[in-house]
Length: 253
Ligand SMILES: [Mg+2]
Image 1 (cartoon, protein in one colour):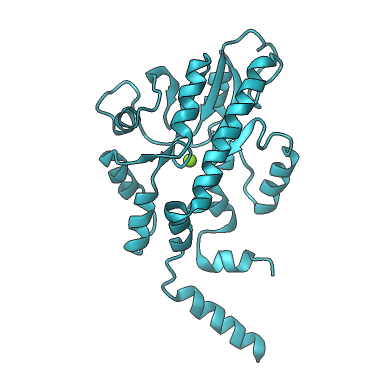
Image 2: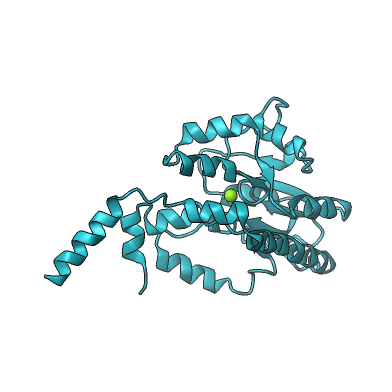
């Protein structure tokens, strides 16, 4: 009897209008804590950059070959929710109680209204001053050779260091491994920065395997790999399941 009531309540709860992303988007847009973590991550990355430059055996990329000591230095960053702040797009979805859709996201990208994540521009300017090339590996559909491209326009508007040869847009796959390999073939990759596990490795599918791989790389986090927090979306969500019911089921109590 109790079990049936519990199941009924859980099902009813899952069907209610929940604004499932409200707390996450509100935290990103209003909390001092988010500013602190994002800015702190970029400042820690700047300190690691100095250590990485001083150590020719240092590389952050799985895809780095063996003979990289003499290669010019580079850093690899994701764009969305790492360098670019699209929380206004997420806020619209919450306000409209709408799910993510690719056409709506493309329309947002076309507006070129994204902001810059706190600490990002300063980090990138500092890297350039030290002779480190910033590469952006993004799953945006973009054209780095076109001044009319919305991603190119937003990078320029925000005064984010941009070079058309260093913006690697979405290919036939959202997996970034080959694009990291492309950068690592001609550069020593000092740091990786992203908001998604996919920005560092090709992640496995399950929650347990992802956690195991993240723990396996414990020595890299905060040293060679820097995460900018994003509780609003990501490959973690596909692993756990995107519905409220999926997430309730996965909770540990
Ligand atoms: Mg991202």
